[in-house]
Image (tube, rainbow, N blue to C red; front, side, top):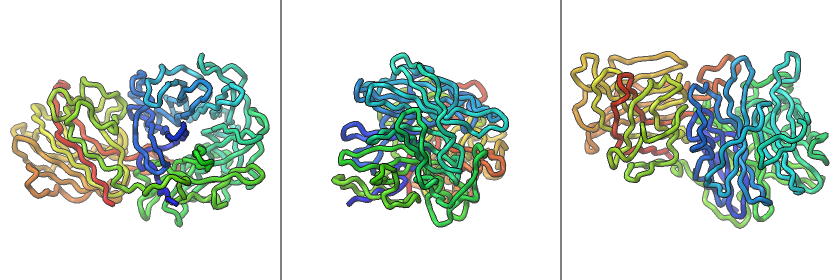
Length: 555
């Protein structure tokens, strides 16, 4: 029997929506303020997963100006066997101020998982976390959280269901309010409908996307309910299985629910799949705090649990408990070695016309006007633009951090002619939180230097005494990240030893709990990225040429 080690997709890969089509498994995940939108991963064995495409590549979604952690939320992937189409529904969260949570939800389809995907059709703005259920009689239903804004009402609101017309992309029935949750944890969201034997099952996320997170389930003989809660009165999957009453709390970190005996935290927001041999699994999000802390730099990752149906048709974890496990048994007949940290290494030398698809960009889309491999063959050319504090047009090419212990290395050439022009390597959470080691002109504008700039919760931090004068030509930069500490190095040729710059930087704050959050709240829920990029607040005409980008995870 093969074993599956969690997380199956490390780094920012939250809100997983899993399906199987014949012998292929697919997972779609949230991407928030990052482009391209909606990561789609593929696997043959439920253990090894590879990013194969994005749902939102050329659909004109504008994420510029998006606040963390708004943007593209909780995509739901489905496959309709009758029309042989893949379907995606998702929410674009455009405002979270005042706890209004204004989200517009859309639907699109494709004949192939690789696309092309149709132009998104608007569905509703009633709330967020939509999903589609394709019933056996050919009808289709949309379930979603109806966001509650009235004072004194159960927050965050009801789970509602309506019939929809897939072809027209329209809601064609009244909304039916079916539940505000199946346990006392509250904060019901992310509804998904399934059918098994004689029942419809409604699976939801609960407890807030923090340490009280969990997967809840109820069932009904009719799609619009009423839904009977699971007889345990508790989540069927969670990282913190002791009882919690938090009805009325719309969403909080619930740090008191941290489980000191588990490396896996925040297990919740699940999606159900059946294997070819009839086994059942739930993909769900999870987090891994830095040891000795409640800070999660890798954001919310994707994990898998094996589940089973009881004799009386209730769903439960295979071992009978509700505590999420770090390892689970793999599907029968699919022998596979567990993936390791090195599975997610990156080696990109920009020798092809297309660069590694794992590169993502915050807020803006990638286009050849500012990033390409054509202008200088064998290099990735990045034209500088806004400061990295900008939520409009930062020139950043980034990849998800997937380990607590890794190095990221690049080599670049850059010839600035103005003090505002920079290019280099860094760690990035969002526009208010990053670390950047870069090439630029010295203040006297007579020589080129390496400098370090940092953003911490919106504060600009400079280190004028940590400056290295460099010659013309290419320079290599390296950041070694180890459990929230970052060490910075440079060298002028690959034959030289790496030279350190200053002391280590404490970058634990580049985590979901370390950025911009009010006390007791999660400040974000995206995750740490590594990046190469450039800034030009002069004429937007300077550029840097990067000859390679390497990420090595320590096993």
